[in-house]
Length: 356
Image 1 (tube, rainbow, N blue to C red):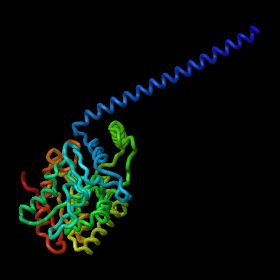
Image 2: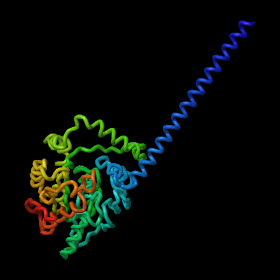
Image 3: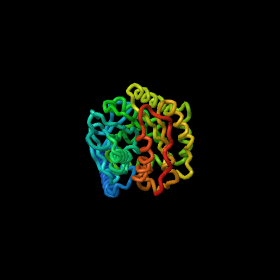
Image 4: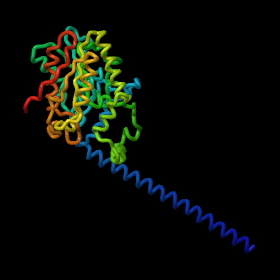
């Protein structure tokens, strides 16, 4: 009996220690989880307060995708603007009308007016630029001042390439029946883009987005191709994005011929280095493509050459043209657009950049 009692006592002590150990482990785990959750919550709150200044370019672009964009049912587009949406991003008010264009309401019936539609990405949209100072709004005002009845519309959407904005026009915007279409082409518009969409955490957490951006930059820092190398690869004749870009421009040209629409391709330079500009060969390539397809080609590089990032960028860290850049682009395009009559004329260079 004594031996049996001793075994029972030993078993009780063993299971008691086991339960106590499990309890201690569970409590320790809960403390760790709660501590991490509180720390994450504090970090998220601190970031949101810090970023409320709207001076963090990456976070403002994230907010743009969250507040003004929605997934598209067209897999080619990936995303579209939310109709009739509005948001203040990077301290700039952006309103989207019922067509998904930047600006106020637009009637389907243009009447006898000439209607010029700009297709492009965030540069066309006028990221970081007040609506009335964008290239399209300035052109609209310049035509009015000249006594010409012309309406200029802005169909720019961030993170679009040529394939996307041509697809969007043909499937969404063709009922606007523009008399003129300007492809406001940026040097990265030949890049191939995936639909993307992210995940719930990245859509709702500034901390998650910040960590993801830091990780992407850290992982890409070693061995990352220079901008010149990147574009050299993008513009290889057999590069998928380059081939798709040319096919999209050809689709738009076929539509324009069938509908009697004047076509222009305004070649917008990369603004990282406009003093020793490294991409003139790409401009020459696009001039040839545009001419072959019947576009009037306008090179915007002369209008902005030699400007520094401090003079031209929307804000430090944001390589989008500011209000000055949009004014220069409008001034370069106006003479070409205002003298248009009949089918597109021969390719025309933009005037040199005005002083000041």
